[in-house]
Image (cartoon, rainbow, N blue to C red; front, side, top):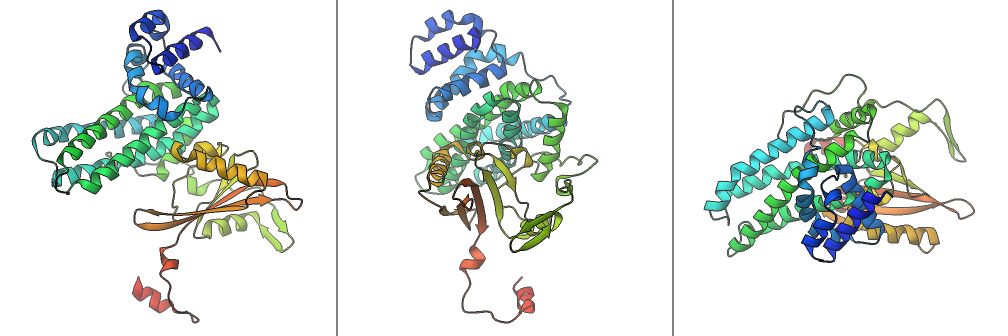
Amino acid sequence: MDKKLENLIAYCQGMYRHENGIMLYNKYLKEIKSITPAELMFIQNEQLNMGLKIDDILPNVDKLINVFYESLSQHKLAEPITIPFLKYLDDENKGLVKILESFKKVMKEKPLVGNQMLRAFLDKVKKYNQHLLKLENVFFPMLEKGDKRFNGLKILWALHDEERGLIKKIESEWDMEGSEEFLKLNVSRLYFILYGLVNKQELILFPSSVNFLTNEAFYSMHMQSFDYSFCFIAPPESPAGLNNSQAAKAVAGLFNSDTGQLKLDELELLLNALPMDISFVNADDKLTYFSSPEKRIFPRSKAAIGRDVRNCHPPKSVHIVEKILAAFKSGEKDDASFWLNVAGEMIYIKYIALRSASGEYMGTVEIVQAVDDIRALQGERRLLEWEDDKEEG
């Protein structure tokens, strides 16, 4: 690590320890005035490596960006942005800012309890989740592949989760009597986070990426972005060429086992036809495969292939992933199950340790399945009743 990064880390550490801010600023003024967006990401990653927790870092993120703003702002991408993937992300951000600006007057002048304009505002900003999913499942893993020091992106992911949690809190109390103070506080906090997410992308994420990713990587991410909805803008036209559903098939060959064989294209069709999401994490904790069912439950993009499984989950749940992997590798456990309600639908999640005939740990398979239809079954069905299915549909 070069001396500049060491000094910047020392400055940040001093801020986290609440040392004299003016003295720290003057001591490290040269580094503060010349920091680049990528260096800020690398600093945060190094602090995580040093044992600092995300919850320790989050309260100081915006303070640090304010201190570094003068230097960071010099690296903002020039308009118009010519890289399609970044351009559409930037356009979505501009659309979000317009929504935020238009609601300011309502927030300042109108009661929020039961306010239908607040309800409509929440419905609009919830669409921004598609933007965040593109960052988490396409952009972040590609940057991590480009340089392992981008592991600090999990700090941004934690902010995404905070935004999602705030929306749920506000929705739960927007029409409850006596919640005006609660709403004012949390809507203001939501504003602060959303503006901050746009700012962090413009100042840090976008300019960092152009120095570490190739044109091929940006094209790949652009193609993968069509697996998600576009928010606040008209959906762009998909580029010419193969889309993700037309991905190249495996080389000719057969999958052979003691119980039969399948052509590789048959195996792919079989796995994708199963009404569940299937993912495989190898013995080195890298995601190496996921199926593509007609209806995915949790978003996933091919940029995640090769990604450390810890980085495929929100920071707040990484400790659970660690616990499962440790128990599987030690042989203490062979499976783990969870079930949760997602958008009113019951989702069943099961992790299964895969072992060789000699008992060696080979990896973990994750199965995610919507089970409302299964839970609602009653009695028996012994005959083919397609006509009844059509009537029910």
